[in-house]
Image (cartoon, rainbow, N blue to C red):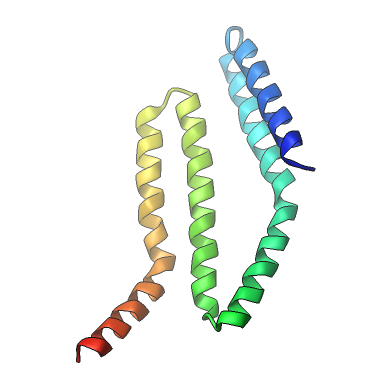
Length: 128
């Protein structure tokens, strides 16, 4: 699988949904959600390479495991939030999409707190 496959599936699903929307908006929405799920599943195998690279980076740079864990959690929240907000926008729910994006940004703070605490500790050590 490569980016061409992902693009072809995306364009095909978009064109089909556009054609279906005139006759049955619910089916078009389900098609778009299904396409998003299929594309997400298609890209999952590439994550193993990214995690391998992150593990190498962690061991080389001596980065704490909780920092990488926080980064992965934050990225997961970003991806899920963006996909969900796009589905909401596609279905005409602009305000829900905006609220969802705000909630996602706030939820990123939770896994990021240990990093912020360590940074504040380092800064306070320099100030003393």
